[in-house]
Image (cartoon, rainbow, N blue to C red; front, side):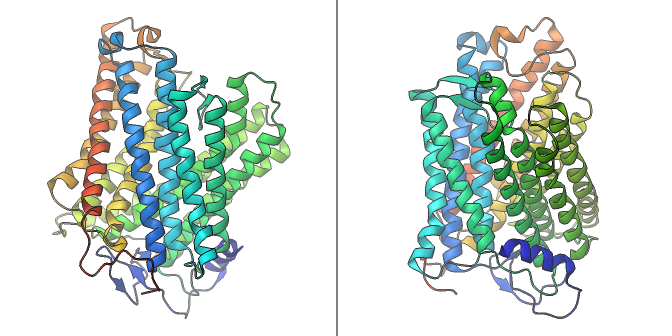
Length: 501
């Protein structure tokens, strides 16, 4: 596979001669001879940008749909308001669709955007049709999952990683979405662009993108393996929990790698000079990637239903993620601190806001994870912090890439406020959850099922509701800001799918 050979070449090739690839700058222009510390995303062709734009539209649609369901979700758990709403299945159905759109569809669509820019451009009508196929499958699957909540909801199953509505319509839509993801990964593996003989900052980011594709391939293999061996006669809750466990853990490496690529690109775009060479960055990416291969080892060494199998995935994620993330968090933090007081371009200010908010949320989620004991709302506080950290990084990367995709740059007060509103709301949301979790409030319940016995518990969940509503407003504001920029064409851009520029 081209992606695997590119990864091996990037790690093993001595630092020496070789041409440096051109790179996308914040303004979307190309520059040559980028310095090794310039962490810029690789350049792209017109055809690649056309595919990337389509994936961005799917990502925005997923956020809009997720936001609509999250309004119902937050209201269903907010004291006082939830008395006016049906609880039980209503809450759980909304939660299933909200999670699948905001995590599954949004993340895969943004991965599709980045991988489309990182692949060799299709050079024939047949190749272009194959390149568009995963987009059409993923869009159809996402629409089917959302519609299933109204036409054939079935029984909501709150499994970790991929909650489901246990109905034919939802399962069929999920299968279509999975098929689209599989075709996308295969194309990204086969059509991977080489890193280069002497990787610079742009090459290091391309290496990270290649690594995220390989991690996703391992996750899909794990899902298929589980589908083949997990007994179908198990109760639905147990069946889906075991089914998604291995692949779900592997997917966390995909999202983490994409987040780290985004952090490095946004740090460079907002004026930070990072005290890390491209070689060290690639080493961190390699550590995360190698840890992904604990996933097939867990399947070979232990039965999928055993505690040992579950624990092996968990410890692999903690080790690989921690070793890769901590040095990059410190390096980006130091780079941002050293660049304080710099005069930033108007388009760079929203990107820095998104970067800082992403890092704060992700670190907060990680720290909360160290305090978890038992099954309570500290668990969603942990993963909301981490997941929203990834989401904010991808939002900032969308801002960064808009000029390169032929759209107007994002700037102005609304764009600067958006990451703080979204991130600040989510921070209040998880603080409220942690507060309530300290009193034992259970997760995945709503209305009277929450059994809020004290003023402190009510206050904690009320803070959660306020933060959730602010975060929803921030998410919708992101859609507004990006849609406005996408409605403005850059001078000289034709939005066509013609030859390479």
